[in-house]
Length: 409
Image (cartoon, rainbow, N blue to C red; front, top):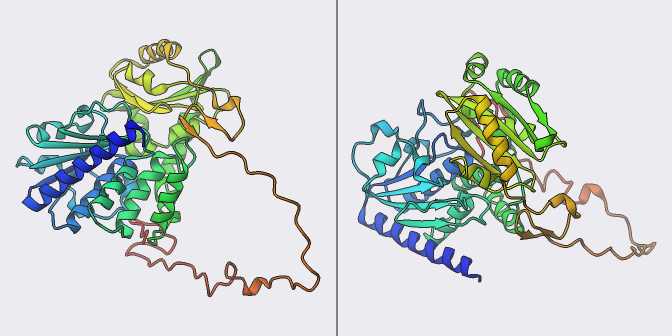
């Protein structure tokens, strides 16, 4: 193993020892997702919380959001009965575990609540400031949830469907449903392991990306309609004001996917969307591979990954964009993944891709006496041998999974 891998392994062992000691001592354990959590942060926190409960602990989960509510797209996740509003936390926890938060500021109000408690940080952002007493940080991990699997395994807890659904949610969130450069062979092996527990990946994907109020579609059209293309800066950008959200009847977290549509513009390397929330602009930035937007955002007080990052500012929109253009001109350039083929080293991601397979030898005709396979007897086409998984309709829900909750197990 490399020195970096050895360090991560040592940090993982230290975190597992601390978790085990806290469970054995009966300590109050608080798991914290970052402000306005996404699928990776909340999925990671809930998965580890459920695992600790299986070991006999009484953990709780919290995050800072106004109002305190689970994002609509994540309400299918199990373990939400363990959630607690930060305002309801009166006693100092014995141990605090922060999931997917790159800095103390990403904890919001919970940073003050956690002060004085022993703190563990588990995160996959290379920009992590290592603000915990124990820090398990792996910038090469595809998601924080992928790191949580290693902790759960080391704790001796077997993956069930509830754990797998939470971990899978984090994995597909941060790999863009396996489209981003962080998707490696190991990621697909982990996904296969999670699917083997019986989770309904199709319903998870539907809840995360394919189910929106009609107002979402209207607002998406408006926000894209005001998008601007600046070829001189290799940039496309747009904005969404707080009044836009109110008019559409949407919450802030529900427009997180807008950037994924904006970034598909072929004429720009960098995509940016400014989202107004409580008087500040929360800016999401994406790169296709040749600009390090993580460094760009770090220079503006934010952070993230090389290809996906963000920052928050109270500047006016015009001033904000002038600052971004200047920072973009100084941003580090990465190797252009479009400069080569679809196989070979992916310098932008820092990983090696599998080489193209060798051409298959010419097929040999089957002997005339060999009968063609009967499709009806093939196990891949026989409904009896591959039954469709049964999806029980929850109260208020149809069998397609629509409604206030989605059964993914």
